Every structure is written in structure tokens, then in C-alpha cells.
Image 1: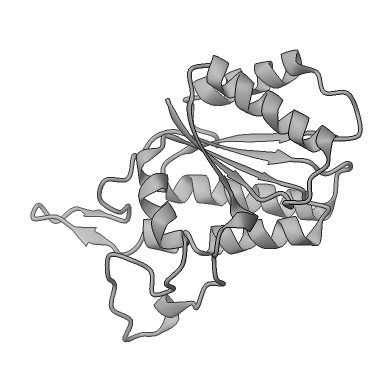
Image 2: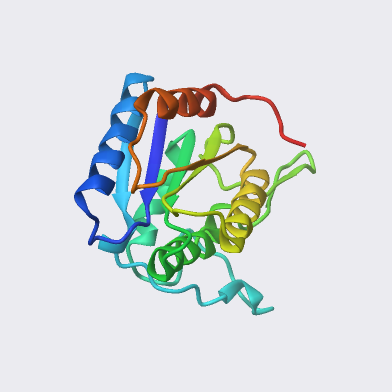
Length: 195
């Protein structure tokens, strides 16, 4: 199953964080995932210009911001599963994640109307089933984590995907790969709709 990993952690990661990421990636591959991994801080992704708030805005096939996000749109479309990795207690990491989520609007705009009168708000060629997971490297529960989870959960509805919750990873503790594997297995095989 094709799985897109969007890593919003700082590029100045310590060795333990890198080891944890390796465990995550290895466990996903062992579960049969074909991974596409992008380190968001390494990409040029500008803030959203809120173009669609303009009444006269005309939709096109790509975002008006000429940056690396235009390269990511087809990759989002071709992957079943999306994994967002961030650290909710670090401002820089949250900024990268928020900016990325803000720029996803072209994936569900505009409305497409078919000859039979039905409409679809998903872009053509977007795989419209799969799962979304949030992996948080924060060392403690915080209000921002709850807000991020709520936000990503709402995105799962927009893209007809199942929000599989989140994995909390405390990078200062020993990481149990068996527990991570169990959580990732639940993520990969989750199909039911969350109410």
C-alpha cells in the first residue's frame, strides 16, 4: 500500500529521533507499505495566500504559489495513506505542519460537476480511500496536540479517509518497536468510519 510520510520535524534532529524515525520507516515497510518520505523543512513551501477567499478567483490545475507544494499534490493523490510527523511542543515543527495543511486546499477544490448532476469535491485522480495518522514527538500532552488532532481528523473527512488517531513518541525514552508495530498495523488495516 502506498504511504506518504510528511516529516515536519526540525532538520536538526538528534540521534535518538533519527533512530525512532528509522524504526517507524522499517516497521511500515515490514507491513508492506511502499513509502514516499518527504522532510518538509527541506522543501520550499510558502504560506497560503488564501486565493480562494476572493470572489473572482478562478481555479486552475495548480496552486498560484510557485513552490515545492505543486510537486507534492500529485504525490498526495497517488498515495492511499498519509502520515504527518511533527513535534507539537516545538514552534518550528508546528509551523511546518500548519503550513503544509493550509496548502492542501487545491486537493479538494474546486467542485466538479458530472453530466448526471452529481458533484464531487475531490480532485480527479485522488485516491479517495485510505488512512491518516499523526505521529507526535512531543514529550507531554498539550493543548496544541489536541488542536492538531482535531484539525487532522477534519481533513480525513474532506479526503474520505479514516483518521487512525495518533502515536505519541517520547524521544527521551526507549522506544519499543513491538508497540510501534502494533500501532502501525492498526493504522494500515483500519477501514471503519470513525463517528
